[in-house]
Image 1 (cartoon, rainbow, N blue to C red):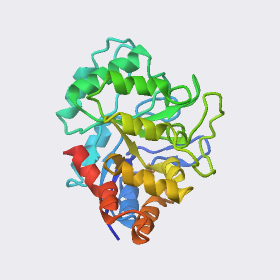
Image 2: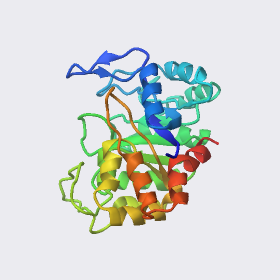
Image 3: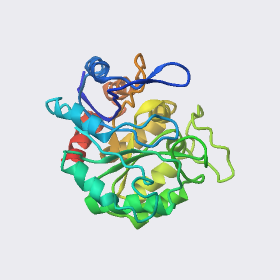
Image 4: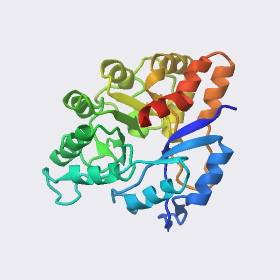
Length: 291
């Protein structure tokens, strides 16, 4: 089986019980076991710092784990746009420079429940672009509820950010983002875990085609659901955007199951995608991202 590189891993040194009693997230040893089982040779560690749903952790915790992994784990930093001063002119650049000097290669998973056009979010995007770091994000259609950067259906605010920050690489992830893989109307209720075939491509294809600075992350059930329910569409999607797609897991709990790698390998074995496309999604795009 081909080795995979994981763009979306979480790990906590100090786990805690979720509202249903399960422990969040997995610890370092659990992460190593999961990655060994899934043939994952390298992974990006994404700290969680926004407090809407999860207990925030220190970026330093992630850096420490990465530093003792002999290159297996690569740290991203994460910065809540409300940090330091909770204003639109917070000196976030100083934090980014501090974390880059400690080896961080990107920013994520960014998921405060703020609109993209909030001035504090705009401040974060500005400093991320100045630092030339990729930014991996999660989104929501809920305002003032739950986690994720807020946008309206069809993601007009995200599109404006792609225009306004052309040198910032955005990496999209999450149920609300992936719901836009099929055509929807502005008035639609967006079922974030859809089951229908993709009769007509949605906003994601348009944005990927239109803007060079948008890439996508296949992690979690949201990514798997997007590419598993209509193989004919998936075949075309993976082929067209092969240079912009990353494999990921989004491990949260011990005992989670992950089907995306098997799906990609099966599609390659059945010649629905080429081995070159599989190699790019599994490894090459990851390596290019982190330099």
